[in-house]
Image (cartoon, rainbow, N blue to C red; front, side, top):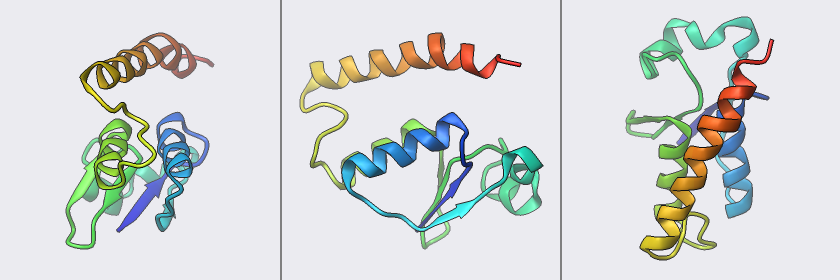
Length: 112
């Protein structure tokens, strides 16, 4: 398995922070998004949206989208629980994820 990372970009950073909090290490492939490397044919073949992060499994299966990748690692390594331990916890985490994406993340993305 390997994680295609985008350096300082917020979504890849979210996955790296999640992995660090879990105490997990995954081999990483750096993708220079400032140079447009996410648009390279090799990356586009993995994720037609041409965005990182991308988690590629050894069998060639691919996950993209930071929350989906984090959810995978949460299921595979439930301790420490970062996405809640019951329905209310998980819903609360999802609520804050959406608030951050819609209110803070969007504002950051629109910065010049």
